[in-house]
Amino acid sequence: MTNTLERRTALVTGGAAGLGLATALSLAREGAQVLIVDRNREAGEAAARSIIEAVPQSNARFFALDLGDLDAVKNFADEREQENLVLDLLINNAGLLPPMQRAATSLGHELGFGVSVVGHYVLTGSLLKALNRAQSPRVVTLSSMAHRTAKLPFNDLNQVSGYDPTIAYGVAKLAALMFALELDRRAQLAGNKLLSLAAHPGISKTGIGAGWNHNGPLPLKHRLARLTMRWAINYGGQSIEDGAKPTLMAAIDANASGGLFYGPSGFAEMRGAPRVAKPSKAAQSLPDAARLWAWLESETGMRYLWP
Image (cartoon, rainbow, N blue to C red):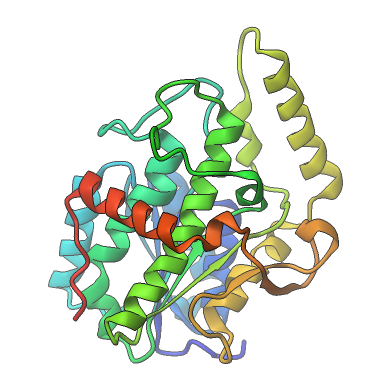
């Protein structure tokens, strides 16, 4: 243990399993006190116990939370505010592979987008006071290689018409990256000390593909997409621990500046040691990022109040 994060607190969404759990464990080994947030209570409590067993001084805590329920997100943040939480690091990791048939949050947002983008937008904004109590607060938001082929359908961000799960996944991951970059720009303009960064895990051998288990007939393009994904994970994927390394680098790199994006260094960024990656041209569009932010403000009624 290097104790890079000694006496610091980190919150990891989607921390009950997969990349989230690997990230939370790595942060605990760096000395952080870890808060795990996940909608799966049983798995989340088990994850917290496993971290404490591996790193007894971590004192990991679990909180059940569905990021698709924005009222619950705000209530969670209010409870942390009552505790006067000092939050050094927020890892917006939670996400899912959109199901073959469109699903939505209680507010009608496409499920993957609602969790990865809308939920994290509200959570981050609701925790700004806790983040600003820290000396050097940092937010890391997870994206994906899939962002590179995506474009934001501003006329239908909730993807009600013509739903396609592969397109929906790319849209959610592109929007998550754009949120991270725009968050950093807005923090800088406000003269705020917060750093916002992003990361992607390449292809990692997680259980995300279970979201595409489906009973009944599927269109040919969906069957091909499922086969391609499973092949990539099984034969091109790296371990979950290696997949979490770009996130860890974004979280603890002392030389990092806001607005950086980390990913694997190997072929097509599928695997390999972490390094700074270049976002797609679409992800770097300032007008589109501002438009996305305005949409999020309108959809959620939340405006960021910079301390």
